[in-house]
Length: 347
Image 1 (cartoon, rainbow, N blue to C red):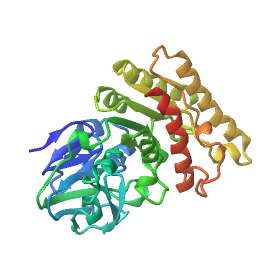
Image 2: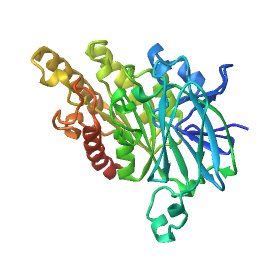
Image 3: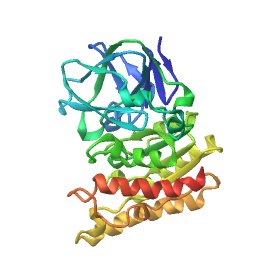
Image 4: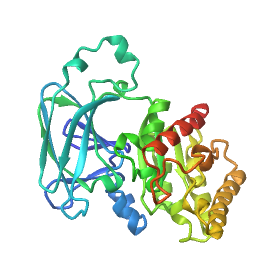
């Protein structure tokens, strides 16, 4: 029996974290998608596909014996393969498994040292180290993932084995996590780790257009305490500044008014090629979008909305990839450290 609780789905004695639905499209296995189908189909066309990329998606369970989990990458996906990484709570395991179009079974047993941890060491951690976490890659590190079933005695984690605070992030491919070498290096995961929170990643590569359907989805969720809205390099050159201002204002108003006890932090555009390359008109346009978001937050009457400047989180382009847009490993870590410092006073 499937139980959906917004941030995750319980099924087959597993918690599917950051999964809005295990979608049965009639093919073998069920697709892991980050929002329910009724939300996904109301998004812009590109975002509909992005919500089936498992950025920030995890399969979580506590094994009582060896557990086997079978996954595959949708054969329709050009990415071809995905690399699944095994964590034990916050502790990085040595196990990595490449999955492809053919169903691949991952065998997992609790490491000996994890079983020997004393209570003091365990209590100092935000996740219980007996919780096995299979981290699935997002963005260009893998395609749509299908779940085919599991074997072995296991149970889903309990609330007290997971962080109490939840951090939700909406934004572009930078949020979804295009360029870091591994999922745990995205700024969303880096920020969450530093503030002791469980991350919910709703990044949407190339398609973060402040869709009203996404705003309403976030607004009606009751499973997050703080949210960042990275708005939005995707809209520069595609939408006018005025349209961006209207859409950003509507998204912020929708979410903030429905969640007065939660903190919402819009983030202006991070430093990128437009700011530093020779075409200064491009830099001026980017700054106009930043100023539009500043004006939206200034006019917002909700006390739970706090603007964060993207250039303050990443003060230079060092650590970006060569497209001078996407943060690599170093820049992701720097953003995570800086953003955690901005969010901690809000919690």
